[in-house]
Every structure is written in structure tokens, then in C-alpha cells.
Length: 204
Length: 184
Image (cartoon, rainbow over the protein chains, first blue to last red):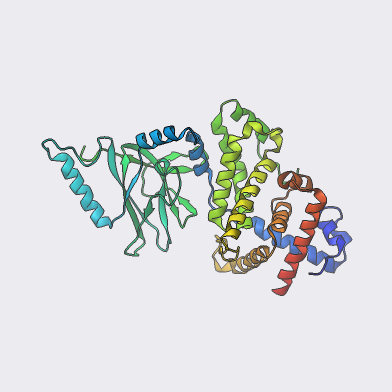
């Protein structure tokens, strides 16, 4: 590796004006500045504000093992059921029927405060799609959507607590996209919008 | 403080609001600094996913330790230091797993139009050249030339002495030029 003329470093460090260099050394300075400029101008990856805000709204982790166990037992957890969209619709119909048809002594499959949420998005060419929200601690990899037909339609069916849930799709692990079909959106507090899903009790 | 100027209110004022209980004001700091932090972490790690993790972890850590920041006006260098340390931890784990930066794959470029082809190729070349630098030299070059920090600010971020940082920047420039010349 050849050492550069020290005057080049002085110019790049703001200690000498560019004009003080002969043209060939000026070209070297400009080449380095152009390289840095390309790195500066390249668009930054998708922001992390939603993730950060969500994490800060959660109580800090910790507490005793007993308290963590108690919290795990009492808090709701998202349950993933991966299946083809057509089967998910059939399942929703069956579950609705189970809840609606009176039974004698047996309760419905879902709790009174739970409902089924189906997430569907069209992301042709995507390698992976996840849905994230407070129900996944805004982490991807918890509820992956699937596109088993490779037609660009990704879907997942999950059981969630009834009520409003903010969510986003994470495509290829890096692009955070508010569901364009959600119809409802809320501010994430950082100038962007999260999609909003209302989960209602099955059959009610 | 070149490159540190930003829209009002200044970081110190925002931090005072947060510490007084307006926790949502942390969003102002996140919005102000996340692009630079993500750019820096992505170039350090060669992976947008890993960079997002490092920056998110760093910002959360910064929020939780905000009260320990002696000089709120230096928030930016402080949060860069936290994220730089997250990057080093990540690189250490990756090295232990035998994964190189090249294997981590290129950083996706949002420009794909034909008119941008030459610029994209040049960017890819510079990115490849960056991966040939040691982590210390890469960090020094990025902080100096991409993030626009002064050597004093770089010393606050890295904990290194200014002559050491100058030497790293100089060596990084020479190594980068060497690689770029090969592809002229």
C-alpha cells in the first residue's frame, strides 16, 4: 500500500485549501471525496423508530424468576397457525359456527376475549414477510406469513386478543410497510403510520 | 460542530423534556439521528438487518441510560458510541461464527433505474473497498468522511486518542484508494 502525499491528508482534514495542491493531487482528493459522497448519498435502510418506541412502551425486562413466570402465565401470547388462505377461511367459518351453535356444557375453542386475525399481503418477489406489532414485541420472525403457491400472496392466520392492534409488515427483514389494505391507520408517534386491525370475538 | 446542526429544539432541550417526564419527546431524537446511525451501522456491518438491530438496541439503551449522560449537548457522539459498540459486538460474534463481511451480502441499493447504473456500480465498488478495511479503519473513515465528525468528536465516540484516529483515517484513505485504483 503506497503512502499518500501528506498534503492530501491535510486538505482532507481541513488544514489546507484544495487549491494549494497541484492538479494531480487535487484529483486524488476529489476521488476520495466522491467515494465518501456516494456513501453519504445512499439511502438509509428502513427506520427503526416503530421498534424503538414499542420497546420503550413495554415495562423494562427483569424481575424475579417467579415474577417472570407469573407474567408469562398471565399475559396473552400470539399463537401462529400457518395454512393456505383457503383453509384459513374454512377454519374461520368452522370456528364461527362452533361459537354460534349452542353447545351443552362445552365452551368455544377460543376465549371470550380472543379472535382470529388473518393477515394477507401482496408482495411479489419477496423472500420473507412477517407481521409485527405489540403482539410480537415488534420483532420479526415471530409470525411469518407464507406464500406456499409462490404467487406473491402472503398470508398468516393468528389468534389474538380482541381489540385494536397496531401492526406492520416487514418484507425481506428490512422493509417496514403499513398494510395498504388495512383501511385504518394510526400515528406511531414518530411521524409514520402503523396499520390498525380490530379483532372481534368470533361469531359475535 | 460540523454536521451536527439540526432543526430546533437542540438535543439538550429535548433531553431535559424527556427527563422531566415527556418520554414521547425521545421520538424527536430518534427521528433526528436514526438515518445517520443506520447509515453508519449498515456500512460497518454490511447488512441492513444487523444494522437495524444494532441501532434499535443502541437507541433503547441510550433512552434507558439517558439520565447518566453528563453533557446532554453531546448526545449525538454518545449515541454513536453506543451504536459503534453494538456494531463491534456484532462483528465479534460474526467473526466467532466465521462469517465475513463479503459473505454478509451487499447492502441493497434503492436506485435501480438505468440512469443510476453507473452510480450504483461505483457505490458497489466503494462498498466492496470498505469491506477490505479492518473494523477500526472502517469505523474511522465512516465517522470522519461519511458522518462528518471532527477528530475531537470521533475521540468521544471511539474512546481513542486523536493521533491514533488520524493514523487510522490516513491508512483507510490509502487502502481505499488502492482498491479503487485497481478498478479504474
